[in-house]
Length: 97
Image 1 (spheres, rainbow, N blue to C red):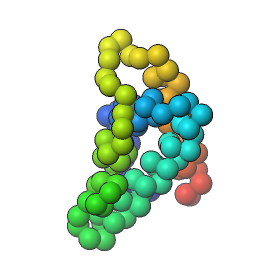
Image 2 (tube, helix red, strand yellow; image 1 turned 120 degrees about the vertical axis):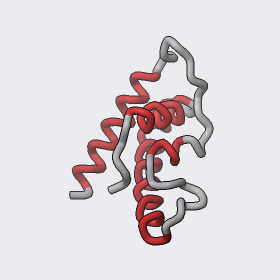
Image 3 (spheres, one colour; image 1 turned 135 degrees about the vertical axis):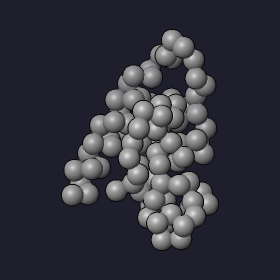
């Protein structure tokens, strides 16, 4: 599995989802998580970050994508995007056991 998921990972991942139509969120969330996992394996094998997908964190994967700007209070749809991302992450953990 990829590196530990922290709050910053979830925030950046949700911002990446918000930059896309909500119908794309489940696929994009799954893709980001899978690519972060592959990047972590690459980092462990080579000692370097993956050239396209980062260092194996969801944060590093997400910041390489277009993202919605940070606004406070949280933008419309942020909590829904966060929910999609977190549910996808939890499902991926159960599949990889």
